[in-house]
Image 1: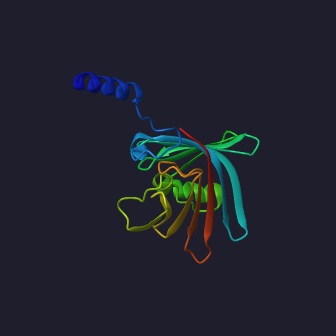
Image 2 (image 1 turned 45 degrees about the vertical axis):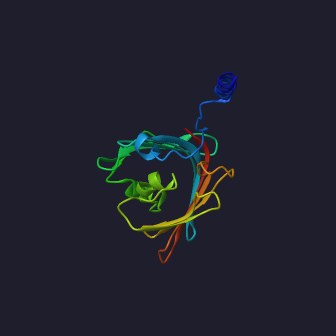
Image 3 (image 1 turned 90 degrees about the vertical axis):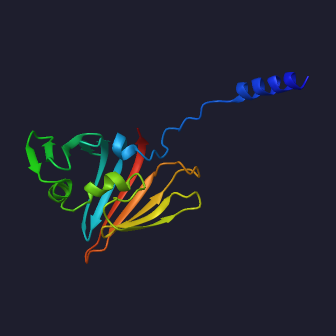
Length: 189
């Protein structure tokens, strides 16, 4: 009788068990190494200089590709490259430019030095491992404020789930004329 009850309990528990999956949009600690794709909007301001753009970003360990588009969806620049190999930019008018790194590109393209090299880690809510940092966490244990490399990154999330990926980042540097970059993420892949 006891064996039959145990067998029924095991069958019932097995029938109720499901494989746990990580829902789309949740934090994957290996995303920087394995890659990610995001779509969203960014704006940056330094003094009276400002810019705004839609973007699509495809990141892998070896390569990044960023498409910058107008609010109507017209791509005005496509940047691709790696941390070690420099960055190439194709403009909508057919011109092509090369830059030594992503920060130099952002300075040339937007007139603002945006820390794109660091952003591929920060966007995941993680610090760059080779640099000192401080981090504050929210009630769910997620990063809420990260300070590193002269920048402060403030994170916002769309839900209370502790695995939720950031939906919004606000980056500020501590220069005499500070830069503020706002990133809104509409879709994670």
